[in-house]
Length: 164
Image 1 (cartoon, rainbow, N blue to C red):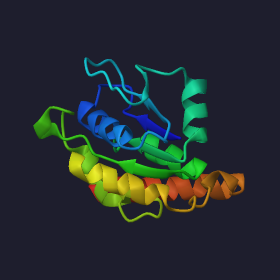
Image 2: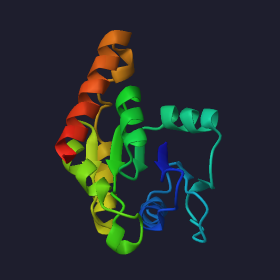
Image 3: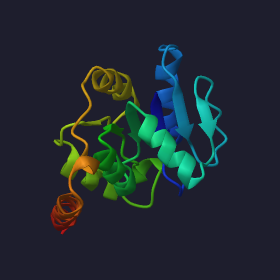
Image 4: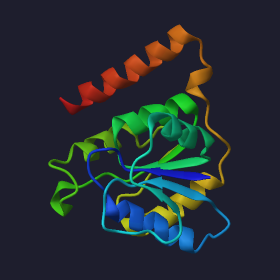
C-alpha cells in the first residue's frame, strides 16, 4: 500500500495529481491519501480530507512507501517506522506555501537511504517505482529507546544547523 500525506495545513494538489496519475497506470497498487480540504477529486485512490491520529498512524505503518510534502513530521515518522519516503517540496512560487523552507529540508535529507525526491510532477512516477522495488530501510523504531532518541535529536540538530 502507498500512503500519501500532505500535512494538515493546506492541500497540495500538485503532489496529489501526480500520485493519482501514477495510480491510474498502476491499478494493482492500493493508494490511500490524506489530502486536506481541496476541490481536486482524485479518481484512482482512497481519499480522506483528514484522518484521526490513530487511523493516520495505522495507514503510515501499513504503507510500503509513503509519499508526502517535505514536512519534518512526515520525514521523522518515516525514519522511525522504517518506511521508504518520496517527498516533493511545496514551493512558494506556486502558491503552495508562504516560503521555500521545504526546499532547504530536501537539501538536508535527500541523500539519506530510503528517501527519494521529486522536485517536479513528471519525476514522481519514476521515483515511486524505484522505491517500490527496494527492500525496506532500517527501522529506527527498533533501536533501544536512548539510541533512538539520541539519533533523532542529532538528525534534527544537524538539519536546523544547516538552515542557519
